Structure formats: structure tokens, C-alpha cells
Length: 109
Image (tube, rainbow, N blue to C red):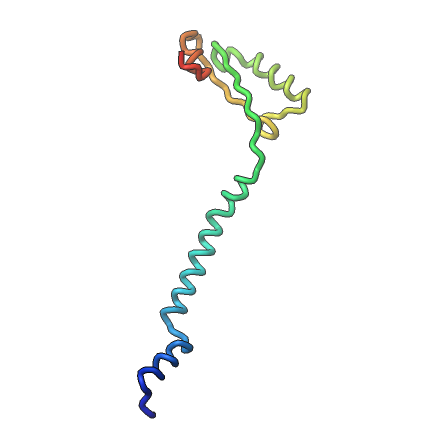
């Protein structure tokens, strides 16, 4: 085998496949596929339309307000609003403690 000059060796290395570079290519592919699998569901969720939110504030408990909540949901349904489909409802209960109402309403009084 003839002896190659250092410049010839560099030229050959430039075009010869290198095991480390092909391994890096596989690693990059795996990282890319993994990142796509992780971020794809987040991107899909980010594109979903945000639901309007209604706040339901009561001085009573959920158990004591069940009839009112049922009527509230029924009235919303008559207007074609369905909780979880095209509307979100946040419930807050003071449990008989009227002093909690401003904090529950987010008024900070």
C-alpha cells in the first residue's frame, strides 16, 4: 500500500464515512423523534380553542346547592351551552362563611 501525504489523508477523511459522525446522526434522529413525540401533543392542545369560563359562586355547600346547580346547567343547556364541550364552569363554595365570599370571588377585600 502506498504511503499517502497528510493532505491526501485529509481529503480521503473528508469523504470517507466516519463511524462517530454516523452515530451522531442516529442520536440526532432519536432526539428529534423523541422531541416530536413530546411536543406534538402540546402543539395540538395549544391549537384547541379555549373554552369560555363561567364562575359559580355560592355562600352554601355543593350539597345544599345541588338543585340550583342543576337548574343552572339546564338553563345553560337550553342555550346550547354544555359544560366541558363548549363551556367551562368554575365552582367556588363559601360553605356558609360569608366572610370568604370576597376572597373566593378574587376581590381581595
